[in-house]
Structure formats: C-alpha cells, structure tokens
Length: 139
Image 1 (cartoon, rainbow, N blue to C red):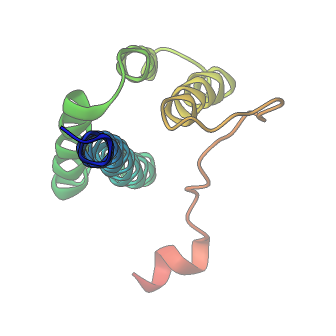
Image 2: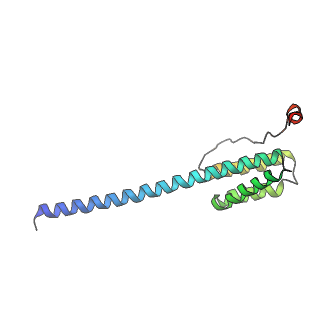
Image 3: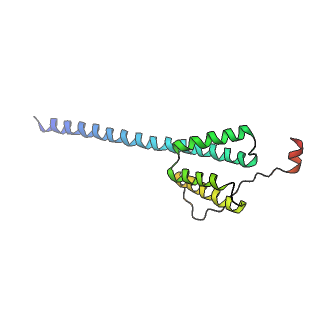
C-alpha cells in the first residue's frame, strides 16, 4: 500500500470518529436543554397553581389544578425540591405566616438550584394574594 492511501484511510477514519463524537455531544446537550425546559415549564405551572391555591384554597378547580401540578413535579423535580415541597405542605396548617414565608423561600431556592440558577442573597418571599375590597364586591 502506498503512503498516500494509508493517510487517506486514517483521515477518513478520523473524520468519521470526530463526526460521531460531535453528534453524541450535540445530542447529549440537546437532551439536557430539553430536560431543563421541561423542568422550567413544570415549575412555573406548580408556582402558578400554588399561587392560586393560596389565594383561594376552597375552590375545587384550584385544588385540582394544584394537585395535578404538584404530582407532575414528582416525575421531573430533584429529590431536594420534592423534600422541600413536602415539608412546605406539611407545615402550612401549623405555622405562622412568617414561618410560611421561610418554607416558601426554601422551596423556591431549591427549585432555582435545580434549574442551576445561583443566588447569593435570595430574599424571603411571599405570595400577594389579598383581594382588595372593591375587587371582592365586583366579583
């Protein structure tokens, strides 16, 4: 065999190898991005349902939507998020509003950590769910 033939074969093999590795890495990166997007969608859905539950925890549709959003999180959320979510739910009937803010803040922090969002000084948060008197009259 000639030297040029060996060089051509090695070049072809290396090109194929590089293409396979690039395709593998691109596919893996695409899967990571799709998973993150799915998590974001489920977390947004859960926070929205939690907000409406805090605003009106007597409505059947509100409770149904919350439970559905919560149950979807069990599939996609990290173990830490699920633990914080369960701790939040367990504590809600027993704690003061200040303590509720702490549980909610910890839940949101764990969601942000799962989404790889970094925070140095994340503030205590709460839901603004109070209905103004004029809104209550008109509905």
